[in-house]
Length: 233
Length: 233
DNA sequence: CAGTGGTCTAGACCACGAA
DNA sequence: TCGTGGTCTAGACCACTGT
Image (tube, rainbow over all chains, first blue to last red; front, side):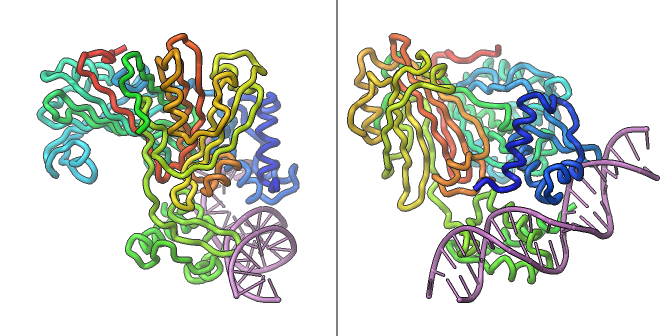
C-alpha cells in the first residue's frame, strides 16, 4: 500500500540518485512540488520528512530544501583505538559535580568533582560528532588536549589502562544534539558510551559519543586465534 | 519554542511516568485527546508520533494508542559470544544466490550458492530481534539449528574461526523490519553486520542483525592487559 | 520586502479491529 | 456495525532567509 507521500519520496529519491537533482542543489519550493505532484502541502512535507530521516535532504528554514552532499563516512574503531579519525575539533572544558548517570558510570560518589570535555569534531564546515568526556578532576589535564592527545595521555597513566567497555545504542537525537550536529530530529544517531578502567580498577574516563546515523558506523574486530572469547553460553 | 505538539508530548510523557496512564493501558482516543488539549487531530497525532519514536506508545490501527509495557532490555554481546540471549526463535531457511552486498561481504563470486537463515527471536509474544545469516552453501547444515547451536557448529569447524568483524550503525527500519519487529517506522534500529572468518581466510558466516533501538544495545569489552590495541593513530 | 519553510486548523474519506 | 487510527485536503498565519 504505497501511500501518496511514500510514492513521492520514492520518486524524489530516484530523481536524486539519477542526477536529476544534483548534490547541493536546491529543490523546487514545497508549494511548487505540491502542485507538480498534485497533493496538498502537508502531504508533500511528509514525503520530504522521509527523505530527511534518511539524511538525503536538508531543510533550511526560509531558504529551501537542499540535496545533501554525500558526506565522508566516519568509522569509529572500537577496542581502544583512536575514538574518532583526526579531525578539527572544538573543545570546551567545564568543571562540575557528578550527577545523573555519571556516578554509576565512573564508579565515584555523587557530587564528586569531575572535568567535562565537550568535543565537537568537524569535517570541513560540517559537524561530524559530538563527544562528552568525563574524567575525575584529579586525573584531568589542565589544558585542553586534542582528542588524540587525550588518549595518548591516558595511555601514559600509571597504573595503565586495563579494560575498555563500549556500549552502543540507536536512538533519535535530543534537540541539543540535532542542533549541534546540524541533522534532522528524525535522523537516528549512533550513541556510544565508553568506559575506560585502569589496572587498579578505577574508572579513568567515561565518554558519551553521538554520531549521525546516516554516515557513521562503529567497527569492532575480534581475533580468536587462541580460542578465547568463543562461548555458546 | 515549545511547539504545541511538543508540549502535548511532554505532558503525556509526564502522565505516563507518574502512573496517570499505566503500562498496557489504552489512551483516550485521538479525537478525545485532541478535544482535551484543544488542538486539531493532526497536531495531536504529531505529538503521539514523537512518543512513538521513543518507543513509549504503540499505535494499533483500529484499536487505539497503548502505553507500551516496559520490555526486557536486550544486550548483544560482541566479540564472538552468543549473538543474542537464548530466546525462542522462529527460523526460515532459504537457498539463494549471492547478490547485492553479499558477494563483497562473504568474499565469494556473485551468484555463488548461499543458504540464508532468517531468525526472528521472541521474548514471550514480543518480537525482539531479526537476523539474516548467510553461509556458503557447502558449509551450511542441512537442518535448522537454533542460533546458539549454529554458533557451536561454527566453533567446531576445521579450520577454526580466526576473526570476527562487527560493524554497527543506527538507522530507521525498513518497512519489512518495522513489521517483523512490530515497532513504529520512526523508531531507530541498531543494525549490526557480523562477518566471521576462519584461519584459512575464508568467510564462513555473515550475519545482518536488526535490534529495536528503544530496548537494545551492544556491548563490547576489550582487555588491554598486554598493551596491545592501544594506538593513537 | 518577497519567498521560503514551520505549524496549525477543521474538516473529509478510507481501512482496520472488536463485538 | 461502529469506533478506531491512517491519510489527505485546502487553506491560514507566523518565523526565518536573502535581497
